[in-house]
Length: 165
Image (cartoon, rainbow, N blue to C red):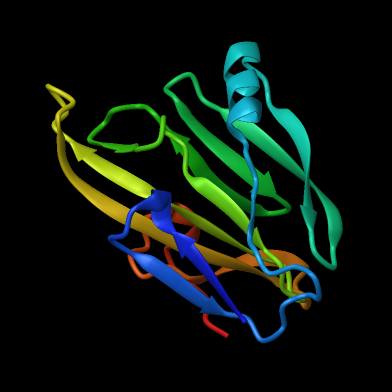
């Protein structure tokens, strides 16, 4: 069985993940829409506690936080991922400043972060270049935390030194 994820619907990059361990009856990734949580955190100037439903692990507590500069993170356990960047300091995320978060329906809890990073002119905010972003995180049963297992571009701070298994 194959799961195809298209980054922001663009045909520039199609990532094909082979999942021999797909859970029965689940063959598609589940998109987690965090836009409302990020908006609520920005408007209320306070972190928002949420739950993310992961196959085999169930509901995991998570936290969405934003800064006054327009950056936002999702924290699950010790893992913190910047999923929102609207602060134009030379790099911003496309798609209204948010990256995509998809949970894969496989036995070992895994999620994928995708999106486009816009490199901008700091003075004019004109987009100079767009770079696709991809990062895969998998649950490590030994350490009881998510780890970045794949990120070819290492554009996310949480994937600076990926752990490959």
